Length: 212
Image (tube, rainbow, N blue to C red; front, side, top):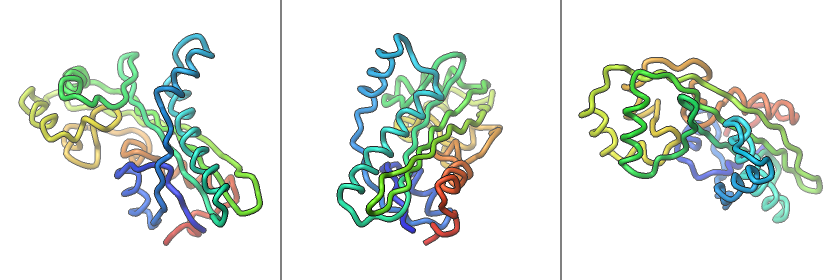
């Protein structure tokens, strides 16, 4: 049984490898901003974080599932995911700039926010239409209240927080500044393994059959 990760995220790839799975990785080539804007225009207002991450996860997984179905020969599952961090009523994706990452860390210091992670799993097999299962996982993340301005500056200078949802990691340099995670810890890394296992099971796929 093959696994395709509809993402080029190093964190998600690492998680699957640590779980005994060596996936094929394909970029979904989805314009996330355009997808979100279209959905919000149709809604007439912003989506809730859980809605948005699930929408984007589904778009990514569906794009890759369609590609593999058209090419033929793939028998397995396609996994798509997306994450966003919500704090104080605001939703944060990737900060991209040092200035924005610094601003967020000054706000997050001593606070607790929610990491929302959308998951979409497609069962793809030759001669059949792909079938999907979806879910959103959440984890509460509490940041140390004694993180100094100098530590924030040094962390931002590493570049690590610039390209991750919420401007932090729990499994690398940022982990020392996080005091508590409530929920599946892998959710904060980028993908809830227990959620993916459950979705695969709903599609008739046994988790251990995915081990390399």
